[in-house]
Image (cartoon, rainbow, N blue to C red; front, side, top):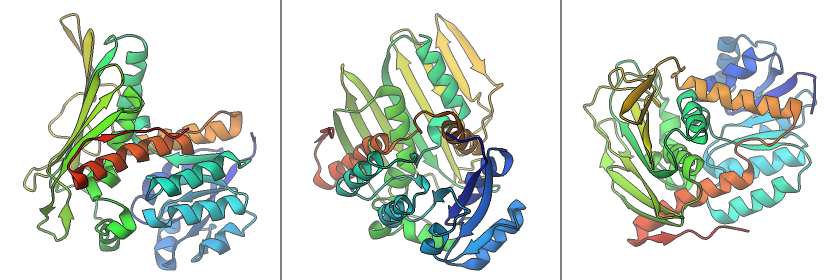
Length: 359
């Protein structure tokens, strides 16, 4: 616990770092003191854009970790670099926030869980979708009994095209096309982490996963691992599924990725619909509740995707100041990774995969 501003070093200043930086820049409990990228000009551009021109610029992770003006490192690196970078950060005595998914496989995840749980400082796996305001409101409603006991969850991920989406640098897209660097496909494994985290958040750990994952070439080059469907079974005869469909000519309003996300949670006495993830189609309410014949729309909820990053970081800063556990802990991140890896294994082997939880 601390009352002094947390001095933050951001490692990897690519496209997504703009969203990670927002709360650090606006919360008096934090100060960005260093940026690290192998391309110094990119880091310098981010420092200029964020108004933190006094921040040190490093091109080497070891150099940033050696700085005594960095308390916390935000590791925003390709997936295959996560384990080594996180272990180095802990060896350097830093507070760690590691981008999802935590690792490439369960052996790496087990190693990281063991190291983080023996570590004396906070360690977080960054996951933002569970902190999206409509999701937070839905969770509160469920805990208050709004839909009774949740019985099923349906998640829909629908990339398309957008005239308003941000530009994703070619290098950021290229490594996500590599199984060696990404660990899985860009939609079902990488972005899918958010959806598996949502299923875990609302329903707990699954017992069994069964998936069909296809590939579709994109007009701009590369591929999407879609159309795909992942089905899961939870204890107590509860069920769920993730459907991923790429619609190349579907216009989606978005400031970020050209993608729409929707969630439907059905309970014993009601239904919740969560709309507006990365972007939106039309003008749906961010959250809709059906109960006892009545429909309630919740439109006074911040729905911008950036708010999920803000709330996730705000929660972590509060943990650092007041105590408690981050979300996700390494152990929780491993649960979500196990879920995602089971989906990939099922598609490869053409069979359902039973989930065996680590002790």
